[in-house]
Length: 258
Image 1 (cartoon, rainbow, N blue to C red):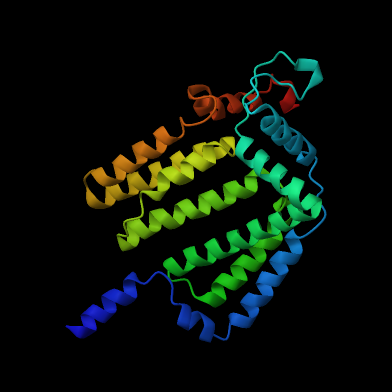
Image 2 (image 1 turned 135 degrees about the horizontal axis):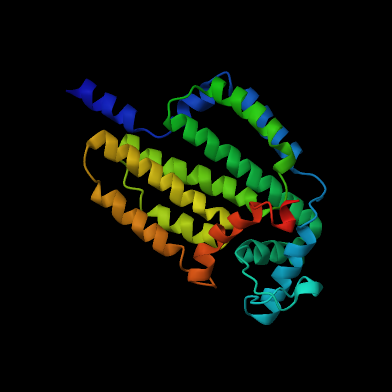
């Protein structure tokens, strides 16, 4: 009986910190942390940085959200939906306090947070630390050019965090689904790719439906709440459907596609 109880506890353990610090791979992992820090702690080079800082400044100074495209002088009368506003006021606040050096440090912190979340997800899936280190080494070398001050950095984190929550529920039956609406609320006010979160939740729901041969009402409830949370943005329904409008920009007739 004690052996069975111990086995259940081991299976439900999310992360074995004792085993992690005792493994011989702790040194390679520390080196990986240093490498990711070096790759992300660099001069700001993204061409959209100035735009995002200007938008954050405008929002804070006007205490409102832009309704017209005030940032493009040739189309000032065009309607404008700014789903990046939370990212913009965050980096503007950091810039005002710590200048550009603070923004570079912020990118490094986001990169390290992503690294930790990926490691945590691998541990949930019982992936050995040596495999995690090797895969993440090549992974971060591949995405090195995307480790920059852009809203998509937070999208990487939201996706990984959501996968962790879903797998904790799906595999270990942890009661963590209440975190999904929080992620979606932050995501829909950070970048238009929050639509990916709805797709991910839907995929897990279909998988669970196939596995259990019945609808998991608790899961369905939190998915609905998560979708409704996306309506909590400065533009309400227009902000919610904005990702669908973005798809039209891939049309051959769109000048931005050329």
